Image 1: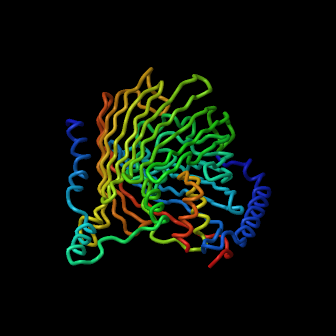
Image 2: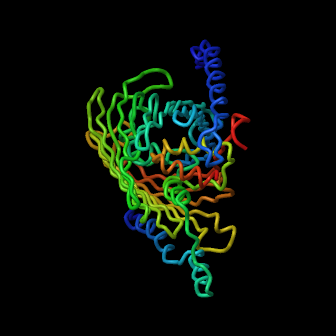
Length: 356
Length: 95
């Protein structure tokens, strides 16, 4: 159904956009430190892609584009926003008939960042909930190695994956051998169209050891509406120094269930001299979830396990072909899941100013 | 099908690949044996770039200078970088 409220606000939105871009353009002309040649031009970046999914024999077509608007105001204030447009088209009778569906849109974040200090960034507005490693860091279509989200991605990210409120984040301590990064937030309950969120408070902390390329972190959250519950997560990320390998894993615990996922990806660019093979990335992931108190709230209602194997082919650093096969095991049904498609990352300057 | 067995295979396959010396290591070894320099000292900006970008995604091959500052501000917020890291990255990506 068309959103007429948006249409009524169109002149205001346009005026706001023009004002924002004008301010940002002036900002882009400003000279900051003179010891580098960096420009501060507003940009639209983001990811786009198309995924053909076949789950249990039922095909779906899923085109997606997620533009990210990034507008700096000087050197300490940044406006950034990401909107997700995802199409979901399936056959009328699941396995036969014409494809029907719609495009879903969602403002994933729209936040103002104040880079207050070397160790503090103040974020206000709508932000991605920093719970675990997936929602904030791995979810974009051009980043994720496997297109299907882990079972436990819904833990700690209710109700929409985003919070409306305030967040403090940054690096608390940084030495040559380790850095401690943190985030703490409070989100208010909101039912505003495109800006829905749950009332919650939480935080995330991780230690990164640069000499090992190893990161270990934990997240906690208190969900403060309806049935008040605690959510927690522990995660690890490891990229061995001399190998194009990426290992990530996470364990999540909630009132509604608990589970883990463990993913390993290996790009062949350092083990072969064959140019075509250097662009290949192999991916594997296992995961399991056990529901508690009936599960639900984004989690399966029966114990489920799954493995995925994927092959990605990087045509360029920002363009890749993706493919994967997964097998889901549960007491309700075992099914095969196939994904194939393409992802693309783009960056477009929005102003002619700035340095060079 | 035994999921644990399958999972072990999934995770051990990439680990098995790690047993193969990386190509650049083999090249470096050749350089050392021929008397050449095996490595180039990396400056702070390159270290910050390598440490932080690859934790989440493949690093871009290049960035136009006029958007470098914007991208680094964005990544400072996303990756929770310090101001020192931001300065090093600016010097590395837009010297």
